Amino acid sequence: MGIVKEFKEFAVKGNMMDMAVGIIIGAAFGKIVSSLVNDIIMPPLGKLLGNVNFTDLYYAMDGKVYESLAKAKEAGAPVFAYGNFIQTVIDFLIIAFVIFMIIKGMNSLKKKKEEAPAAPPAPTKEETLLTEIRDILKNK
Image 1 (tube, rainbow, N blue to C red):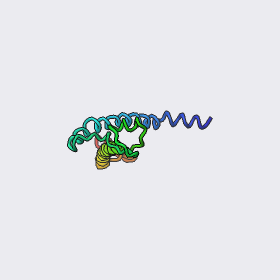
Image 2 (cartoon, rainbow, N blue to C red):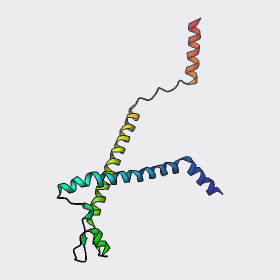
Image 3 (cartoon, one colour):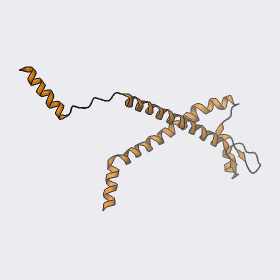
Image 4 (cartoon, rainbow, N blue to C red):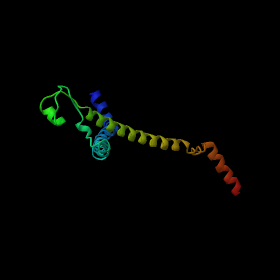
């Protein structure tokens, strides 16, 4: 019974919920980055490199020539699809850069909070009592 109770406390505390939200947002963010790379970045880059579609770059290891990567896979040929690898590396670099910028922003906010002057400590009971006595004596 103790483990069930501990798990329940862990799940309800928010740690698990925060993690779940992070995973869901991360998955959505991954789709956005993939779309950015596939639909926005790679077409102009492919155009600059002579109308190259990176996802179609491959080497058929059986020595034959195929019209496309899809045709090679359809024929059952072993293929070295290095274009997909290039695409994935670019996805990773963009995600890593965005995460770096987010963490850098969070760290700068954290430093600003640390640099903010600390509020003066609250007066002790003795100081409060002495202040009250002083004020009473002043008013007499």
